[in-house]
Length: 354
Image (cartoon, rainbow, N blue to C red; front, top):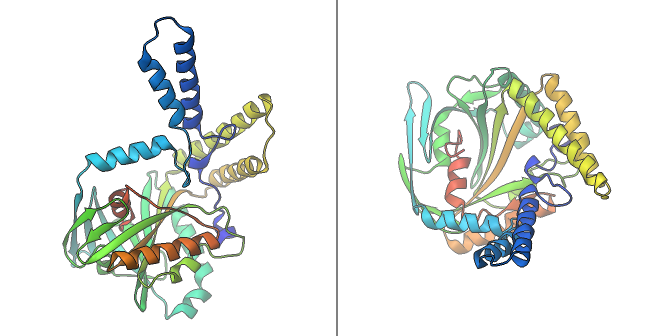
């Protein structure tokens, strides 16, 4: 539930005087270079070209990314290989799974024990409280830890998988089932993935990975991801959580409050008024700092929607349906164009591409 999780706009969306930091830096640099080229004698033309480029890169596009960010994404897409190998090895005796996909992780899988959707809906709050307490316990370990939860929809069968490091025990209500994690990857121990601009191909499947970027518009009292799970008959929801170590978490939380407060002071000193959004964000950061000091875990959360289909037409239809329902539920999806192979590896159990 949204009020239980307390999610808002991501820290990556923080703005200064209405723009993101890299946009402000590029605009200032571009104006400086153009001004020097116009006033200095015998200034090289390349200086004017770089200045115009710096002014063009911060311009936003329809999906929120700037022209500069799209240029970097396109460059990375061109230079990297179109093929990626995904190797999965399951040790039945040790109940440990190794996933090698742009990085290697060892994990154990656990399935949520419930007797059906009615039983699950009656205990969803208890399950959330158990996972929150589990994350708080991991925060005391002194090292940053990572775990993931996957809701796997396979036609008429829905399973919930919890992927944990091999040295971590699960909360109550989860039974060992590491082999279930193989259904997140494919049907073979070694899969070759072909990347296209807007999807990837594995075996006989076409896969599109979307990422939830913003939860702030979800009304209180509503489940965050319930509605979009009914958009496609073949949809996986992958929730990855990185638990920041306790001492580091306190520094990160305090630094975020200081940065936001300093930006507000600078904004008001420059003659701009504080917006309701910035005031709400600052209050949320202060509340988060207080909770972290009291011992609550600081989490970095990423939510991926993995849509599978047997044909390109079916995939495009399901992607449009998921995106529409996400928008109606108050969620904003990133399309992930040019980053499909990277996102697919990042959403796998254990996050080998994290």
